[in-house]
Amino acid sequence: ANDEFDLAEFNEGDYAEAVATKNLAEQITMVLYPNDSSVNGKELRLRQQYFLSSASLQDLLARYVSQFGEDFSQFSEHNVLQLNDTHPSIAVPELMRLLLDKYSLSWDAAWAITSQSMAYTNHTLLPEALERWSVPMMKNMLPRIVEIIFEINARYLEHVAHHWPGDIQKLASMSIVEEGPEQHIRMAYLAIVASFSVNGVAGLHTQLLKQGLFNDFYQLWPDKFNNKTNGVTPRRWLAYCNPKLSALICRRLGDEWINDLSRLTALNAFSSDKQFVKEWAQIKFENKQALSTFVKQQCDVEFDPLMMFDVQVKRIHEYKRQLLNILHVIHLYRRILSGDTQNMVPRCVLIGGKAAPGYAMAKQIIKLANNVAHMVNSDPLVTPFLRMAFLPNYNVSAMEKICPGTDLSEQISTAGKEASGTGNMKFMMNGALTIGTLDGANIEMLEEVGDDNFFLFGLDANQVAQARINYQPQHIVEHSTALNGVMSMLKSGHFNLVEPGIFNDIIASIIDPNDQWMTAADFDSYCLAQEQVAKTYLDQDSWQKISIRNTAASGRFSSDNTIAGYRDEIWMKK
Ligand SMILES: *Cc1c(COP(=O)(O)O)cnc(C)c1O
Image 1 (cartoon, helix red, strand yellow):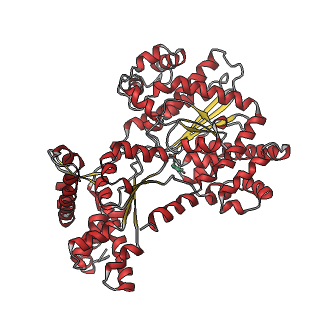
Image 2: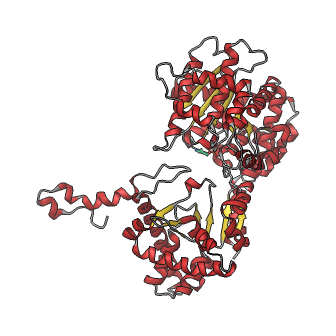
Image 3: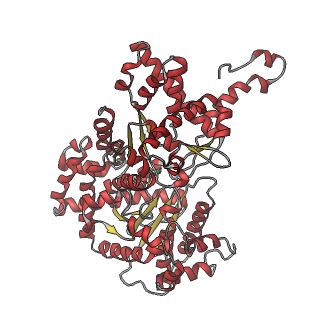
């Protein structure tokens, strides 16, 4: 605050008024918006975005001016503003404002600098996640910024009109300003128009941006578009979080892998070394013991490290299909109750994650996971084969304990919906095997490790688009003995005996022809892949070999590679 404490107000006996300015200022950054893959067009969120973007730009300009003076001809050579999603995209008109109004540059000079300094990373294809700000609301808070956005738009639409002469529809669909009862600013479009680089975060994601969501922009500026597959840092996600495995790797390979993760491929040479495989398996077992202790503390559920640890931890969202996982648990539960346990591998299923506060369906999925876990864990005929826990407050510290102790990583999103995923990479680095769809970076993981070492299932992105045209989930249920049984049990109220009707929305969503996530479509294929998982797990030698191959193939997913890509192909390219 400009004025933290007003002594005069305090002396007059008004404490609240004395600290009002300070309170008002602190509200701006008190709570970060917890939305994920959905937006919430609240004023405070825009205030946060503007405050943080403007502060960063003012700091950057002050540093530049102290070195070069007010000659901005070198600015874009020395600076790139990598917009991490659209959250800071208000920096585009804010940089223009500062150059025009504070440093008195001409429009053309300011635009040349801005458009050669901005680069945009898109993180999602889900339309509900694309930020759009109401123009009246923005005008009220940031009138000059709105003026500048409209001027950017007018000049940009001239370029569009030149590229598609006479195409009025194109002007409307590509405009930064969305028309309607209330005008909205499409922040992703603003970011694309102002940026010299636009990137997606996995191969499929970038391809879908170019062919779908941003196709018009790709036609206009094909050279702006590029891919930077996400990565995770091997310092945190292997060396630090899994000290025992790191030590074993260091004993065989030395420690250079920590800064050059591609060296992990040398582990393949040890996948037939009996002593090495034994140590590898023993470390996984000890990490599972530690994870059981954590699950006991956090969820009060006993996980037996002799059972398979089947884990799905990530934000709760329908597209990530925690529901598909729960339906499979119910399927296993029914098999056990009916005595069909031959060759069944005993499993502990862990689902963990947070839901955005206003996302009702996600909250219901959490409730279902808890209720199914309760029924499973309280039947002593079931627990030798199956146990389940829901982990609340999933965060990075939890993941540091979870990924080293996981046997099976669940990456089961509807194909075409997960931009990249990074949880998938943390698990792979730590020797988990993946069951997953052809989505996000899973595709590149499969490419690296080979299909003998990955449990693939489900429709691919093209097949999802095709199947959507005439999707009849009720028909799928009727023709699948397994899914029919699971749906009947859900409908019978078996998991909500004292809470009638609470899962009706979930049940309805599965058989809804408009179910965007197509859970029913992939259920049988998922169960088959899970049977393949069980079969492989029964042969521990081959399981451990595949585990080693997964770690060995994870080098490409070091964030060191990703950052080198941003450096060489975006920041240094101009
Ligand atoms: C890695 C990580 C994520 C991302 O997980 P995905 O499975 O890629 O969605 C989310 N939250 C936490 C705490 C993580 O560590």
